[in-house]
Amino acid sequence: MSINIISETDDTIRVIASSVEEYMRKFYKPTRYHGRGIDYAAALLRSHERDFEKFGADVISHHDSITGKTVWLVAIDHSAQRAADRVSHTEK
Image (cartoon, rainbow, N blue to C red; front, side):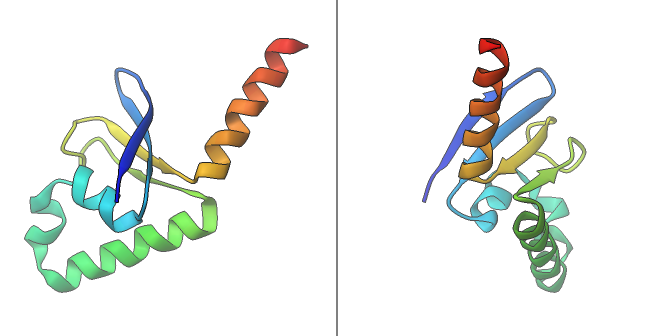
């Protein structure tokens, strides 16, 4: 399992991770994730997994992130498409 940071600014981090669970363990404040009980943590994980499946991305707000920054999990194919889009726009 691994997490790769693909971009970072003063207030946002974009990452690729091998699972939503791994991403949440790494970036979600423990007191706001597992600190609220096992049932809450399981429901929160399911919610983030559904969002990732539906949208190809998921976000942890800066309030809930251990980094103090908004953290986006993006699907590999989505980040590659965005990079390709940026290249095609600069070539025009």
